[in-house]
Image (cartoon, rainbow, N blue to C red; front, side, top):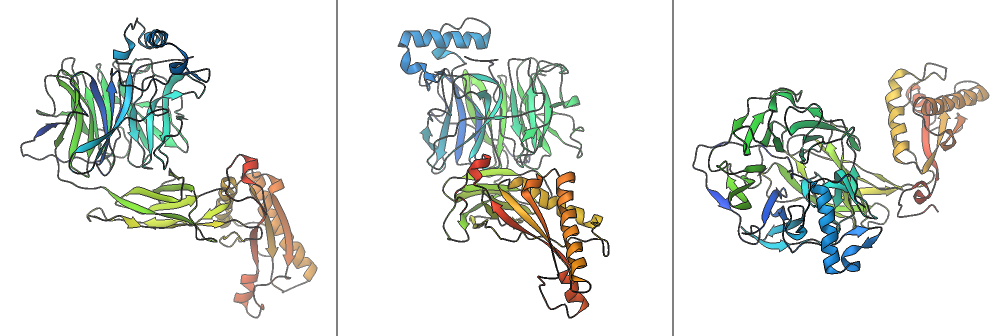
Length: 554
């Protein structure tokens, strides 16, 4: 059954910068097929290239009727009359009042997709389950990965829905994965509406919520990505009033924030503020857009696409809610398209894998999933950007790109990513580990390299390692062997006690002077022989530790 159900105000993807011109603005209403005279079309979102439009339609009888409860689809189990009555009871629970005509209710919300094959959106797609079902459905944000969307609510495979947000991924055959819950620390919303956006780099989330510290019915809050979850939402202060602040949109460079507010007499208008510093706490005075963007009707849900220069928004100025656009800037693409394949270095064949991307100076990584080893992703201009393939049982080779903001890139760039199969006996490349002279005391300047090794072991829980200590040939062989063993054990102790690596995964041995890499004929050559090597000693089938691997241990 449904749990903690709620209805929504939709939210938008936050992306790109906006420039204001003095020329006359020409308002366009999107064509029939997208807009209808009888139903509400809301929540416009565009792909970065401006060729795919996502939106939500309310109250249409042409909705996906899938309604899962206790692992059964009631749409095929119940009679038409019983199904409509049952759906009405669900919507009544959502609304807190009786809903007698659920098919025409605003709780009946489905996601639609329009694709452009030229200058117009002329191909309309109505996806089925699991992207749509009989419960309220809305895409609120695209993610930097390109094939992912964030939808409102959290869904249960056996049936039901709860408050929050979920991630869905479009597969290579255009089907959609089941929603995966997004975790936000101490998330709660006491109001009936929610809206949000995510920054283009995937690190910042702006939400419109009603909480204990809200100034009005809905305030804007900020949350920061912390690995795979998000920090507790913080009230954004002076931006908020005692009226509603809703449907935020954050520019690509994180400097401009667009939103709608009821502060001018009870109907929503679109506003913009500019961030003054890096604290996310100091903002300029809100500026309201003039006609034709704002009108005497309700205007909200701004979304700016820099690829085309169009601002998209929703308005009920013609009766029902429709989607409009106005070109407020010249085309200025902020992203570069990269296409390629993920290749196994041993076979040269494509490998299904994840691609992790992000700025080099940031710990946050966005994840793109390739099911067939090919990919098309967008990367931002202006800074070193890391792209690396990840797959259990393989080691990825990082690629780095840096595209200038002032340049226009009209063609997609080609990059193939490499995945090298992990094998027993393969050496793990590391910087030298330094010890105090003639002792096993690790010097502090080697801690960072050992921390990096610990991260590698945590990311690859299916491998064991052998740490081998080596010395030059200057001295008693047995004493040299003992010193090399003590140094290997010191590295193991650091990994076990400082970084909490399972000791059963680590073997420490001392080789002394028995395996030199040169003839020890000079001080420089002897220095190279005084080393610690780390190699893979065993590989567990990744599936045994909850991972999916392409190749099993041989």
